[in-house]
Image (tube, rainbow, N blue to C red; front, side, top):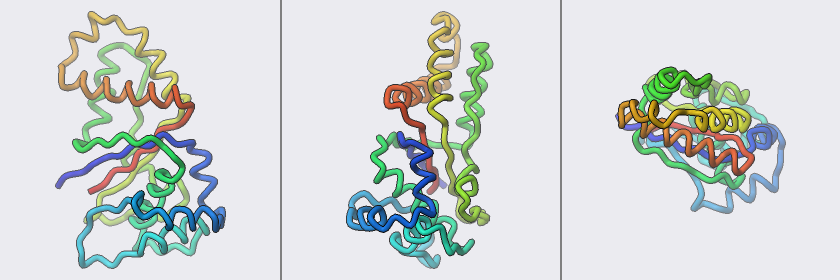
Length: 196
């Protein structure tokens, strides 16, 4: 099964403030922009909320139904799109990614840990957890402070030592560093959403 991850440069505090805000203007603006909508690829027989139904529940702060937790996560991603976050698509996401990058950081002796975001959302946002192993999806965020620290630590690396890392692993590390650098420049956090 293939998974993709999309990362958005978004102010996480602004994102979380929209949840339960009952902001009718925000709801109407997102629903009126169908070209920006995001959906996961799920079994066609699965009962789904429409994008507008899920978005309404998230912006209104409920009511929520655990059967539709994946739909609420989609609504969060649509909020990220609307909030103007630059998007980095990663079509090759796998579950070993964070541990592999952290291993490289250890080899370089850096005080950096890219914490695991695989199961932080939607629960950390106060939305129902995705408790259905037929539907693997989730997400999380890295704060701007984490991104700034990561870039600063990376800049102290000895290029000769960096050159000893496996080339494929180094590619993953450099992609993460580039993304944290973009977050540093933008003064925003990185919000990541992954799924089928």
